[in-house]
Structure formats: structure tokens, C-alpha cells
Image (cartoon, rainbow, N blue to C red; front, side, top):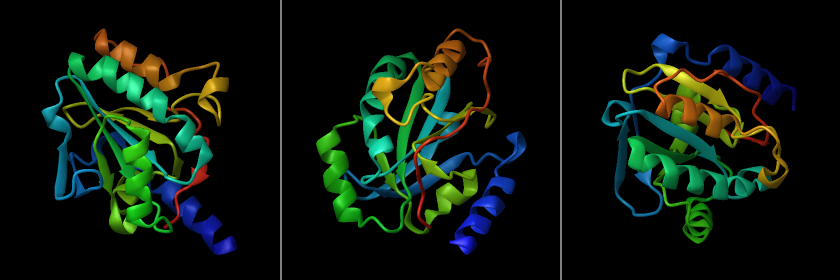
Length: 183
């Protein structure tokens, strides 16, 4: 347990600065098979990268929110990708879960948690909003609750609304609630 705590501390310290945000994310397309490559420069407004889990109740409760935000913002020039990084969740189990959840966004299988390590993602759901220029515009929780239905503050929705209007989000970082990504 102590070893895991140190790993989390080191990952938090290694979180990317604005200049170090990866511009390309690639891995297996968990839903459609084959390779999946997401380039942040391909978005007109921003790319939303959401770390998700097939066994975390907090992550599962936010799948509807992610689906609704994608429906609203993809037509406005945003792109969305979910990233499944948990090494203790078999890909077949995760694939079945995410097909049933019908989030409507691609799910990247992050073998070895490489994408999670690049961004410093610690929990599910943990979201990052990246500009086409590679600037980290927002990172943190989808909202202020472990369960989406109980949320009072909708951090991701507020950030996307601001970006859609050409403004920087008022809040660039928030606390992430949920299950720890198992590496």
C-alpha cells in the first residue's frame, strides 16, 4: 500500500506542464478493433480526453454526462476520446462494458497505462481538455461528485462552454474524484 502511495505522489509531481502536453494519443480501439490515433491538432476547438473504468462506480455514473457533452460539443468542433488504462481490468470485460454503456465516443485501450502516465491521470473519471495548439485548458473531475446525479458544480461542462465561446475556462483545474487507476 505504501509503495502505491509513493507511485501516486511521483505521478502527481510528474503531471505535464502546459508545454509538455502530448499532441497524439494512440492505442487499440477498444470498441471497433484496430488502431486508434487521436491528434489534438485535429480538433477545431479542443480535445477532451476522459480516463474511464469498467468497474469504478464513479466512472460509470459519469458515462451519461460524457455522452451528453459529446453530443453537444462534437458538432461545435470538439473531439472526445475515452481512455481505459486500468491494468487489472481485462480488455474483453472493458469492451463489453463500454459497448453496453454506449457513450458514443471512441475508447482507447491504454495498455501499460502509457497515456495515463503521460498525462499524470490518477483516477477515473479524470478529464483533460487540450487545445489544438497543445495547451492544457482544463484538467480534473467531470463535476464535484462521486456520482453524477448528485453534482452541484459541472466543471467539464463549464470549461467546454467557455471554450466554445472563445474564452478560457474560469477554472483550469479541479479535484478528481473516483477510483485510482491501477497500473
